Each structure stands twice: as structure tokens, then as C-alpha cells.
Length: 199
Image (cartoon, rainbow, N blue to C red; front, side, top):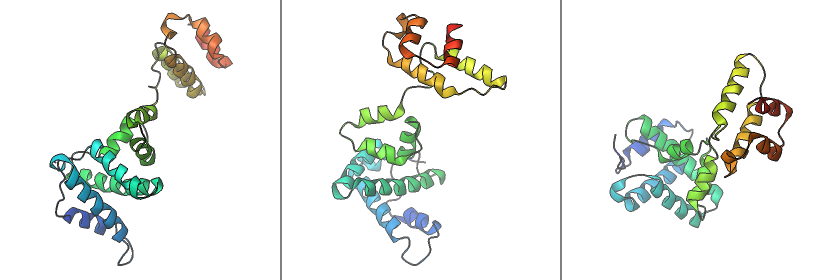
């Protein structure tokens, strides 16, 4: 596997489009056109043909200059599928779209595209990532309680506890506040209140 772009002659592109098994003589032309333009951009603009999120961002910004955002999203989805195929076939080390989706805990390429073309991509990607699951100072205790109750066969709505945990994560002073003052500020549901008051 290599970091540099592996398909300068477009042989892999043609094989990928043929593998799509699209019906009709011209059915693969739109895919091939999008992928050919993407490859040309990568080989012309990326240092040594290396593909990374910076190159993707530059390519997407060019796309939205020429067409609506929805079209750029569809092109990115087409390219991401091709990159997945290159990775699975051993021709490319990583698909940067897949890495960004994983980092943001998202399945949607569209959300990543919108973040990359926004005025402040770093902040947009950070907001996609959201807060860590049970990431507050109380998180491990809350998570252990939820898992214990589920193990006992009780139907527990984890989201209620996660909402409280996210509330605590957003408070800069949370660690220095008493649990009772956090509860008063949050106004939680009865199930959560009963557990937390027992801590």
C-alpha cells in the first residue's frame, strides 16, 4: 500500500467503474467523469500525489465554486466509494473521508463535506464530533450504573443519563460543584435523580 495516488494511468478507475456493473453502454460515464476529475485534481495539487484531508478540502472547495453544495456532496460520496474500493483492494493506505467520518463518529459523508467547505472547517468538524460518551468526571460511575441495571434486565434509557453527563461536561465549574447543585441546575428526570442522589 502507498500514500501516494496509485492510479495515474486511470486503469484502476476503469476497472472500478466496470466492477459497478451498471446497465447500459453509457451508464458508467457520470461516475468515470467525476472520478477522472478528482484524480486529475489530486495529481495536480497534492504534494507527490499524496491524498489527505487537506487535499479533499481543496477539491471540495473547487467543487462548490462550480456547482451547488448538493452536487459536491454527491461527488464526494462517489469518490468515497472509490477510495474505499482502493483501500480494500490494497492500492491505497487510507480513505480520508472514512477517517474523518470515524473521527467525527458519523456515517454521513454529507456532514463531513459540509464541515470541510464551511468557513471554519476545524470548528465545524469539532462540533460534529460532539462530546465523548460519559466523558464527565461523573461519567464512569453513571455508565457503570446504566450497564449494571441493563445486566439485571431492566429497561434503562441510557440517553437520559448521557444528557446529564453532557450537561456536566459543558460546565467549566462542574468538578468543583456539589452533586446536589448540579442536579438543581439540570432538573433531571426521576430515574436519574434517584440514582444520583444515592451517590
